[in-house]
Image (cartoon, rainbow, N blue to C red; front, side, top):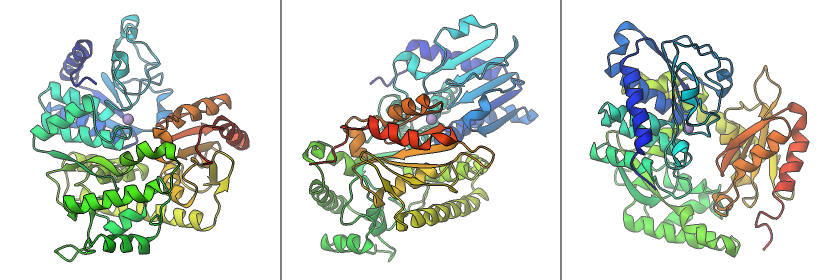
Length: 478
Ligand SMILES: [Mn+2]
């Protein structure tokens, strides 16, 4: 995988730099997720540093994809980041419009489209150059590369955060290609460190016994059972409290203790899985982890995964303003607000997970399982599905549905699955897109986490079609 920009792509960055320098009235649209908010933060930092704010002449809006359908193009320069390639965003452009798109999603228009229109249209998308937009670079990375044109290499850490938030490392357990080049910049700047680590969520802030209990790619005796995780920790002679008498977190462990835990987990997993999955087991427990060196230890801003969760909590609770402040380095009030948002968010998730997990409302079909998430906000139903997986059967994907919004009764579908299924080659994002489109909806996403929108009366048909499509693809009997 290449770590430098193809010359043609680099040329477009030089053009983008010029457009930014020469425009005064600028609008940024970015996507409502960690990657989108990260790109937005990088772009605003660039504009701030160019002095664009002095005349209050740029604004940023963090939006869902559906607002892009009929957007007026009113500013001198409009920048779309982490979105735009897949939507008709230039529909209302006129000959004076200038548009920049920095997106890593599959493009609707081809690489030469800019030559066919009479306005300035500059689309930078890695897919045009054979670079994989799902694991080599994301929206935040693309925005960082623009910052780098200006010499702002200190923004590289946000590119790393974006990549982790976008799960760009999910296939191999580490950042690769252009993402790795960005990581190198961040290391050179002394902002990020990375190491091979035990792959558990909550390294800095979750007690180890809790972090272990959330393991759900395979149902283990420790899954959702903190008595078992505590017994395991004691068995390995790892102290439950650290030297400061706080609950031990993964970040407190030394290499030897991590090794013990890794080999114990590998043993436990191997007992539970069909042989064909054996080769993937190490990838379930070992992955690179990334730390932000300017953040305090034992805070959720120190570890890239935990930081990305906090950013998602903001955007999903309509508080992208707080996320932008945090990323822009304005921590004074924003940190308190972030704390409250994260807490409320966690409580909302926990309440829903408990009621679904305990009411045994997961319904089994031959090749999938699902639950009715009616009442759950559509922008968190995926997160909840991922957490509910540990109460169901890890051999099958789990599907949840809920109403899109109060005004829109159509259904938002989310699918989550064990990483083992994805490693085994099933791309659920593609399957769900196909099925949703055949029912007049749309969908897509990653192989382990994806979603769709379908008409409200198509639920049963959707489930039956998915069930049918997955026939023979899963290792259910062994
Ligand atoms: Mn993205």
